[in-house]
Image 1 (tube, rainbow, N blue to C red):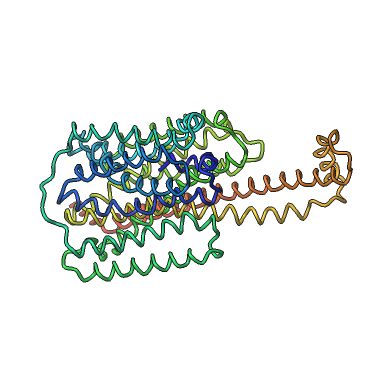
Image 2: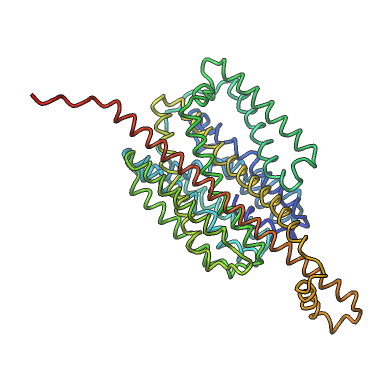
Length: 499
């Protein structure tokens, strides 16, 4: 996912695509990927996840090999769609392999923390290795690496199988119908969230059609599951107070975490920074994420969960606020500390929250694990898309706002503005004799600078918004802890008087 997402701008030329058309590569990947993990739990129980993974990886290798010989956008979209299907069992297998290495007492502590840390570091690793690949082979080099990684994973699955689980016939006909409805709903929603900002939300009618289809199919799936004796997804449990609170916490976290993966990365592109200028920053982000994951593994126990969340939200809020002070002269060196804080906070937050939800599902019974996976999948996959769409839309709206304010002050009757136009046009004075054209060129250059400054102000607003959301979540957590502490004090029995 990150290989394509981090390089959409760079691969447009090799695919002869516009920036909007390249966005379909991400949408095609996410459409099947966001829902397939729902089916994997029952597929593993009836057929075994290993068999499904072997088939999907083999198919992915074949399609990747075919893609080496084509270079058009349509074939690339098809391959990304199949990549989304193949990645679902791969990510689940990677998660299970990490838990397999630890004894039962440490699976939901150290094992869970390290597994989620590996997921977190994939984004900075991609940013570090993909520029070299793009330089050597453009889009084909990325697919060659994906194919190589799949070929490495395939024999590992054969040689090092997971501990088998007892197989039983658990898939019912209505499960297939319910899953297909959920898959269509999540897939349509993923496409809307990915492409809505590019086509703009109210300008493309087909976005509304997809959203209606998503709502209708999801509603139908919920109605079916409510009246089944053995549902695929326990809707009533998902709608309970505790689980809604858990889902809201994960969704807010994913929204704040989008600051680094979406807003900051786009901010660097807006400044025109090249890979050589941001490579050190991504090394620092990678080290901070690993450090945060190791610290989380050391602190993973029920007594420290709330303290870890306080630390994580504090780091996220402080880091985002520091980024909100950026200017056109800001360079990666000024963002080393803030981005390291955000990377550490991201690695610290997720494992304790997931462990708590996983234990709540296990307490209800093994059948509730699938319902928990639906919640986690929605808040992380769909939540990530919501974060990207929300921040991207927010930046666009705020850029228009700041552009209007700045444009009102750019009048040639202002001596400072006239002087700046003359300075910018002076570079073309030797090749352009017409003073009118020369003045027009200076005005165009000044307009470009105004647009850049408006974007920087808009990104600062986005950083500040992320900080405010993190502070809001931190305040809510502190109130929740205080409420629980006060309730325990009031309910504690009074000490017996001394005789």
